[in-house]
Image (cartoon, rainbow, N blue to C red; front, side):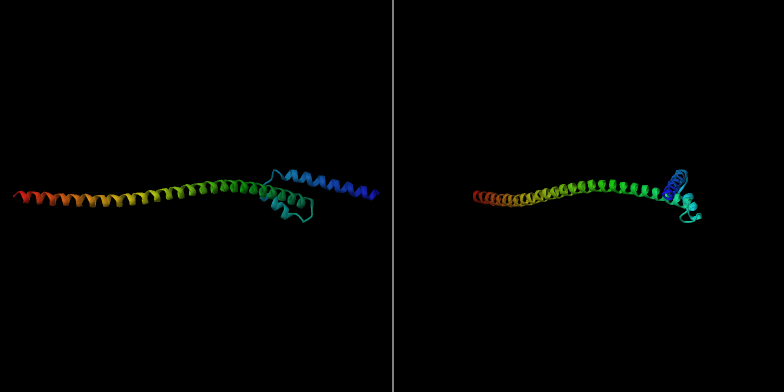
Length: 137
């Protein structure tokens, strides 16, 4: 039982030591921590503290990147919805313009017929006038 208590005391001391080293590394640069990690033997307190700090920083960077990606995805979703609305509006406007062009085409056909009728009536009246003039002479 005394051995268990002593092992536990050593484990607690090692954890406290590692936590103190991690706190010390908080103010260091990423490169400095990586270099110190490579300089120490794997499994040593410094190596473990450096690895823990690098893992923590990498986790924070991954979380920040995930959050950024989430925000970008939300903005893209909003943009896609806006583009869909614009596409619907453009399609409706295009259909309206096509309907107006068809109506204009039909109106131009009616106008063309009206012009031909007016020319025909004018020619008939002109020949009628000529006939009346030639009859009086």
